[in-house]
Image (cartoon, rainbow, N blue to C red; front, side, top):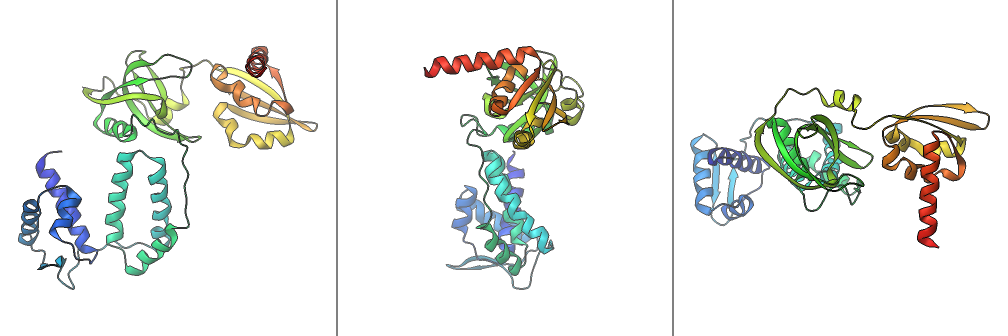
Amino acid sequence: MDDSLKKINRIVAILTHLQAGKNVTAQALAERFNVSLRTIYRDMRTIEEAGVPIIGEAGQGYSLMEGYRLAPVMFTREEAESFIAAEKLMQQLTDETLGKHYESAMYKIKAVMRATEKERLESLEQSIEVRPRAEMFNDEVPHALATILEAIADRKQILMTYQAQFQEPSVRSIEPVGIFHESGFWYFAGYCTLRQAYRQFRLDRIIKLSATDKPFTKVHPSLSEIRSSDNSLPITDVRIIASKRMARYMGVSKYNFGFVKEEASGDKVIMHFRTRYLEYGFERWLMMYADECEILEPAVLKDRIIALLNRIREQHS
């Protein structure tokens, strides 16, 4: 970001802080924006020259002249309350960089709210809790989401080292198309220049990630189109029969493994899957419910379950 753009962003943030109706010292502003006091003094002169009436009091700091307000943004009570839930989600479910950007945006939004709205939000903050999966991001790549989103917006390739399940790490050049959150994990879809095909990647399996200046080599379809036509793995038809009780426990997790439909069969349920993950965890997922399930097809899935059970038996015998 060039210096002029940084200055504009800083001045907007200073105005937002003053709009909140609180005095702020030059020292506090300098520490917040990691600049010198001289820079803050120049910024304040720029704001004054633009016609904004600023009051400076020795020992008290700066404030806006009483009665002067920037154009307000008005929110309904329900809109204001929705911000708190969104803020909790952004704090826990995004990476470090995006979390800071959202925190800054919320600061600006709260600055233009009425006092009663602010008090109501503060009372709700302690009543909402979001607990993320510990492994949602690789600690060695803390800015993955922000880097990928920026590459999507700029239409630039990224370079990453990726650890696919049961495979050795590989270095890939990707043209990212979109991100999505599913079953407690963040993923992104993109065009792999090495495989010359679209692939999906889980963010916690990224070992290294960097932006590049290389532009996209082609125009890509939308994220939804890529996901609906993913052909990176072969599809296998699976049928299992389970007790109705166990079928209910499978809940939404079954959709992550290609669940299509189910049909009643006496006191049981026949469940149909078209899955791309037969070799990538289907049997491990099914093991959670295996005591009340029977595999109808394919036979290879039975073999994989038996092989897994034998390895468990050897491990613990």
